[in-house]
Amino acid sequence: MDKILRADAAGPAFQRLAEANHLFLAGAVPLAALSKKDTTLGKAVDIALGVAIPVHSHQAINSVLSDYVPKSVLGGARFAALASTSIALLGLMRLNLQGPGITETVKQLWRSPAAKQ
Image (tube, rainbow, N blue to C red; front, side, top):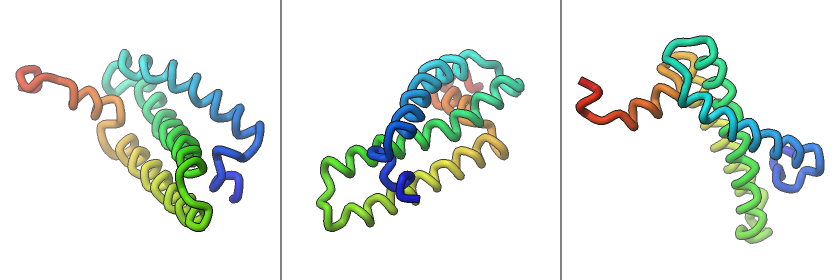
C-alpha cells in the first residue's frame, strides 16, 4: 500500500511501469482517435485508457505532492490523491462499460454543432 501511496518514489519497478505507461498512452491515444465507433478495438483501447490515464495521473500528482505539500500533511494529501484516482478509475470504467466510452465522449465534445444534427 505504501508504494501505491508514494507512487513517485516507490522504486525502480514503479518507475519502469510509469515509463511503459507513458509510451502506451503515446500510442493508444492516436489509435483511439482513429478507431471506429462500436468496434472491438475501440472498446479495448477505451478500457486500457480507463486504467492508464488514472495511473499516469496518480503518479504525476504524487510528484507534485512531494515537491509542494508540507511534510505535516503529506500523508493525508496522498490518501486524498489515491481516493481521487480511485474515483476517476471507477468513473472511466463506468463510462466505458455502460456508456459510449472515453473515445466517443471526447469525439462528441469536438464535433461541431452542425455535425451533430
